[in-house]
Length: 566
Image (tube, rainbow, N blue to C red; front, side):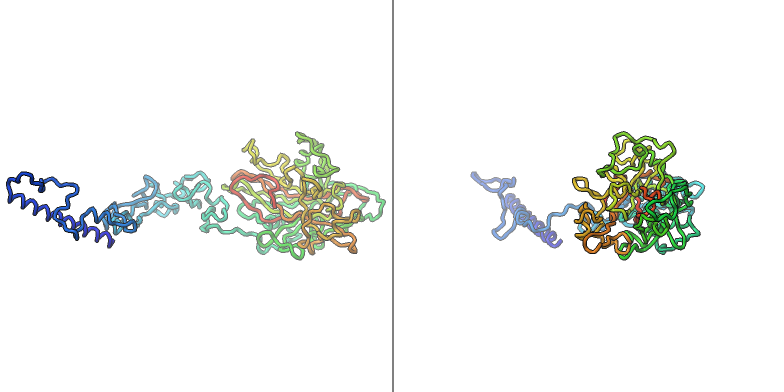
């Protein structure tokens, strides 16, 4: 500002000198009415190089401007007069002076180069129902009688919607009481007055299940994996089908048994002594929830004491006295209605292309010690997918890989996504099972690591030499184990046999399962386990399998269905 003032004074001074010189010349011209011949004096027309009567010490205007260095302040173009005010309004067209909305004022800044901030304007905000003020400036004070669902999300301002207009948030139709809170987007997606809050519903659930409240236990299992209200509508714990009669020599511990008919118990075992499911804050000595305060567990035997004996058909050996058909809609989509051995198995039969067809005719195979958690959930308006974590553990790994004891875990999704998105690259599996790899192999013992380029998913297993290098001693020949320290105290850790071999066991580590859904629908998720195979006393009820469930999450965009990584 000082340089500008100095420049202005110099220019004014130079112009004054020039003006004085011109006046003197004009005065001299008046004294001599007729110039003499050859007079080269001022003719009244300025010459471009004329400097008048300036001396060497005087400064011209050209010299003042040319003498400005690049470091000097540039000449400021005046856009407004300092101190002047003007009206301003940044709201949507047609809302100014409607309802509570009004214009503000902006003031020209000191050097006149532009306008300051707009102050005092009132813009549209979410309507407060029935307070006689038109906050969203649409010309109407909304009440329950006249409220309109502007964004079509099923809620009005009077029903808790905090965003109906694009001026209030991005994608108003995805913001409202029926939306889930998207993490880290700096927006109140569910209109509860909080931004980016974490929804938790597993606090205080650890080991609170009650043998006299099976329906309540199922709800707690769903909450233990962080599927919370208001999305959780109902849950049920059951067998994988109707209780069935099986042929078994109940209590037999001999090499030769005489199986006879035995009717299954109606529900998975859960009494004071044996529980096949649980919500807990810790599994074993080291395994803790992936997220939150608790995780949920389903097992084909006692959840914290898996059995390893196939000698006796008694509860101490893992016989939970239950049998039922495996999920029929899943079985109907398997080749020749048989439980798949997995394409990774040398003894397995690869599923022929195009063989998915209803082939069971109402008689799917039986599973032993089956357990299934069925969850019905309302999909949020802003969700197109979900995911959750699973940790699969098997006593049979690696000893019975590809030997007919492929205990199964499935996660079956019932959704209208495929019907409403035909041809989508994100269509859910045709057999509904999300617990499978890219080659459509269902999660089970036969998905153990194999040599070659396919690999497998059992990585939580012992790296001890005696567990990996002694063929014929119950060792693990697959060679991709990363250690099983995390399994300490679970019953699934390896047990050394005098340093010359070991009893294996192991697990997959945390895997992500993901599927796709339609906003606003009620989707069904069935999570099931059962044992497969036969032993001397009848259908195999021993060598238990367990799955841990945790960290259920909604997602805004569709995901590749199936196992999505670790």
